[in-house]
Amino acid sequence: MNSSVKGNKLVLERVFQAPVELVFQAYSEPDRLEKWWGPEGWETKVKTFEFMPNGVWHYGMTCVDEGMGEFYGMQSWGLGIFQSIEPMKRIQYKDMFSDAEGMVNEQLPMIDIDLRFIPEGKETKLVIESEFESEAELQKLLEMQVIDGMTSQFNCLDQYLAKVKMH
Image 1 (cartoon, helix red, strand yellow):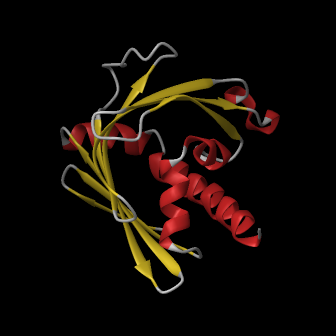
Image 2 (spheres, helix red, strand yellow):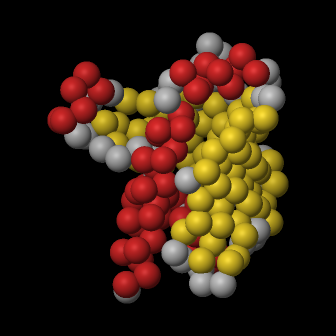
Image 3 (cartoon, helix red, strand yellow):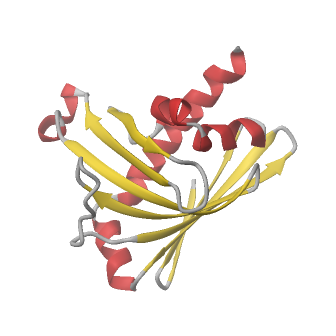
């Protein structure tokens, strides 16, 4: 995975060994998302998923890996509001930390996420641009190891895509 920081933006890029249709479906269908979303050792349950502009995506992740020490059993909730969707090309949404009821945690950054799905033959280049309200907000997430977390999450997506391609 390539990553770069430009001001208040974090850009992540990774090429997946799967066609764009499959990578887009992995992001746009809740039953598929649950199979890979989150870092390794975590399971995701989607509570709400309205894949349309202004639709809500509310999900919870639980650490199920006993080898992760103090993180084992921990829960983390997220809330997304879809802004714009171009099938097989782009998904834009606001990403926020929340609780199980969907109340936004104002202490943590709100992020504008722009996912671009770029076909490269039988592969797909995924470009994720995350725009923060300030460089300080971005720094807060970098200190929370967001790049390691995204690398781990992309590994989960890679494994999921490899399994789905075999069927």
